[in-house]
Image (cartoon, rainbow, N blue to C red; front, top):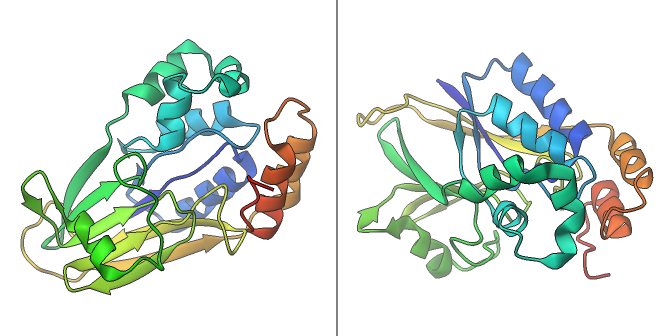
Length: 234
């Protein structure tokens, strides 16, 4: 079975549709969503609807809960765009899930708010804390949130970041994780994990942002999708 695991669509519809085309060509069996359908970009309604239509499993991210739960008064732009039903759906998403693939039990979460922000450069002791939760010990961890795809092996097992579809840092393309293995099988078997990098029309995403004068932190978002350099505080 081939599973695409992705997250951080962040209102970037051109990137999301480019990823959809790539996954269709690669003939994935299921798409799993690891949070942050909304925020940052101008087309959060469309990316939220895309996730709901195309994904088989869902968890929420910090932006989903922040916007869906109306935690920040500055997010009225997104509340107005999404409407009550979508906000309620975002706020209802579970925080994590697990999956057994080819004999490896994986823990999957977005990142925040389950953990603090995790990144590839974190020391192995910090990352290894993620392999135990609720009395369960895992052989792999898959998460999103930091917007930089990576795969590391630790003494505890595999730790993998999906990268971001709509707001990737470093390389400004759409990213996801492809997992090939036998789902729901406790028997050890071949397991392949591949970072998928998909080019998209970044300037179309810029044009969508430029057409919306009300988009919060618009200049920072545009710089991020053009350059892959985090710009929210600049």
